[in-house]
Length: 359
Ligand code: ASP
Image (cartoon, rainbow, N blue to C red; front, side):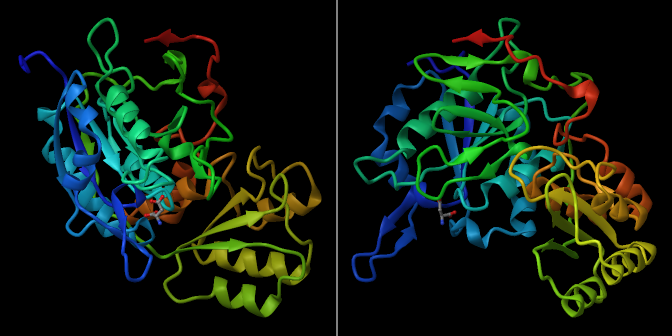
């Protein structure tokens, strides 16, 4: 077989259900190897591309994912960057949205596809969704535009019938095969009989800029979800925690919080001390608008920064990324309101919805 002109894809197997097998004694799913994957998908050999693979040792359930492993993943992509046309990352779905977000920030000037996928049922099970996800992810990672440039030079998640921008995704369903959503940005491609790419929604890299990988994260970050009845004692202690650098505060509606004197005082004290407090909404879709209600305006006046329509996953990983690079609190606040990888909607970033290429 002539392999010379075929695109080449590197499969990076990190773990997750897609490669798990049932332990007959305990009944639990445990990680298996990449060979297990390829044995169950002989169709891989029929794809019009050269596939090589590497795997985490040992493969992990994605609940055990952590920044040190994001660094390992970024190194794998970076060390193999010139040898492959695209990358497919097999990853557990539970924290896939965090890793895909972290990679979107880590791989600056990315000009090749990095497509995350996984499955809800292991490959070895008859009704598995893993086989289709894997094959489609490889097709997308190797797809080219008519001018020969990569079709999707972004970090994405492909799950069932949608290709989504990685830093816009959230795992929204623990049961259905269609497990991921991108509530605030439309899909980059829809997968049916054809793979329909919405080219105007896909970022285009500057071809003159080389890949600039980043490997630093600072994890002194916490997510604080507000709820009616939240206690002063607990909020105050959280905000005064030693070493705390940033808070992702999940607020109500368009970015609102209880209008209590103790609450705005505690927030104000923390922002004055240099803690970056990001306001993201608990609603799955829509954007923060702190000017809209008094209950939101008080947060703005206390020094809270709007997270606009950014997901919690992208906000957490972007904060870790910026703090890891030693930016001052004011620089972090400014960059949190700048789109680095298409993670927030700015006016100039509005997608055109109906421009597509079909393959
Ligand atoms: N617990 C698994 C993981 O995230 C679930 C999955 O693979 O989808 O690794």
